[in-house]
Image (cartoon, rainbow, N blue to C red; front, side):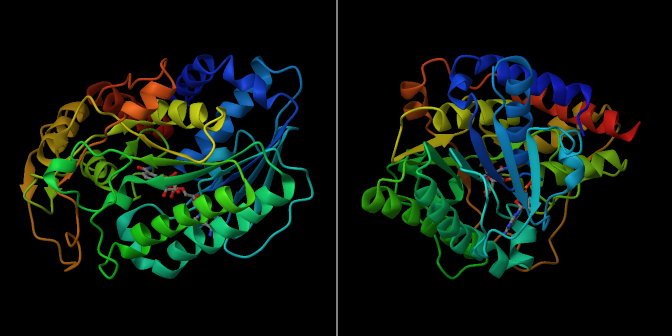
Length: 354
Ligand SMILES: NC(=O)c1ccc[n+]([C@@H]2O[C@H](COP(=O)([O-])OP(=O)(O)OC[C@H]3O[C@@H](n4cnc5c(N)ncnc54)[C@H](O)[C@@H]3O)[C@@H](O)[C@H]2O)c1
């Protein structure tokens, strides 16, 4: 579904990429996880390129098994001539009849509570799924393959490694409750690098830091939508930690602009952090900002989670160093700060509700 806020977001992203998008003229892009938060933005931005900038349409093949996504996110695209939706599980081998030129692999459960409920499915999409897609990339001799990895590959970084650079090797538990996600993303990255070095598949890897915005469902159970859901339901915001861990939240437009820059560049075999390095805030401050955004008279409460694994291996600070991204793409920088991003996200929910 495209609301006014989403349309503005898409237009902003697309206009920023007006020159870069020429590479997609007449091409075919496979997007996995297309019915998810980020995947649906990838699809909409290419649709905008088609309808505004490109001479020949770029065909979008959108794949999703709907395990955590929803077709309503791409409902505006389903009837477009350049758009094809395939309901499929990327963890099982599948064939695409079209010749592919680009692949964005964004299929993975990404919400900690949901991936802990579905650990095997999470591991499969990041490992078997990534391998299946790399095979497709190799067979089709694609121009670029983008793997959407995560800052979680760094685990809980040591203080001297914060802000965290791409070269940091991580401090990750391979047996803890988050390992199904963190470790499978790490292995997914290894697969990408092996296909790059062994078969010359032009992979590139993005490591996202806490992306949020419209279309991140209020029931997704990640911390930001969880707090918004409290406020939406006129309930006090419930913190299940002491609120001291910090994060740098990145609004969706800044993240997607960075992802397309990486996809449409020549940065074969490169890894990029993508996130907001300008604002690092505590979870308590986030809760207070959301109360303010809602305009409601709510308070912040502290409770203990009934889930004994809730805070295990939860990093204390997550803060990106995005120097590499800025050096490769001098026109990219985070532009939407938390106050504005939260207001846009709240506005989106109001639009969807009416
Ligand atoms: N949003 C963030 O803050 C963030 C941070 C770091 C990394 N990422 C990564 O970015 C990508 C997109 O994340 P998102 O926030 O849009 O998540 P999301 O849950 O909104 O979207 C993921 C989509 O993938 C689909 N999917 C999952 N497993 C699948 C499978 N086996 N086959 C086909 N489809 C499958 C889901 O149904 C969903 O539509 C993921 O790879 C995620 O790990 C996101």
